[in-house]
Each structure stands twice: as structure tokens, then as C-alpha cells.
Length: 93
Image (cartoon, rainbow, N blue to C red; front, side, top):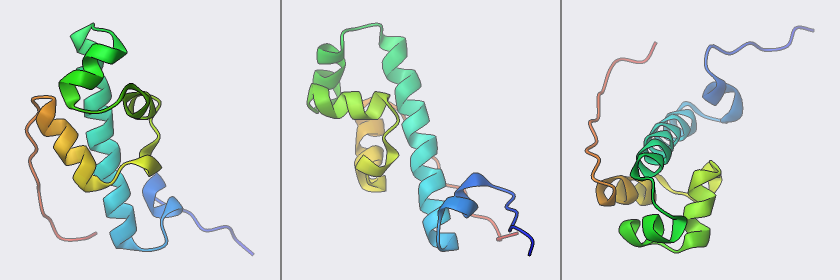
């Protein structure tokens, strides 16, 4: 028996294509947020205040705990961080 192969890691982690798309979108936003917060060169407390969240919540973000953030929450944080989001829609492969 052959093990299944996947072209993207999110396809391997998710049970459905919709779940994989959600994971991918959340991971992209989380990555952008981590980079933005790092560029601020401020304390975690100051960064958390800037985003309107607690320091423990910021710590979850900076540690990449994707499961703790919904897509909606990450969009709100990205906006608070001064990031703009662009959605591109294409045919599935």
C-alpha cells in the first residue's frame, strides 16, 4: 500500500479542501503579523497594546499557534497592525 502524497502541506493536514484553504490563509496572515510585530522593535507589552490584545495572546501569535486564531481574528489583527489584505480567487487545480 502506497502512502498518499500531497503537493501542499495544508492538504495533508486538512480533511477537506475548504479546511486546507482556511489553514493556508490563516498561516499567511499569521506570518505577516509576526514579521510586522518584529519590525516594530518594541516590547511584547507595547506590541500587544498596539494590537489591542493581551500579552499572552500576542505570545501565542508570535509562537505561531495557528489553532488559537480564527481567520476573522487574524484579519482584525492584521488591520490593527496597519496591514492591508488582498484576496485573490482562482480556479482550483
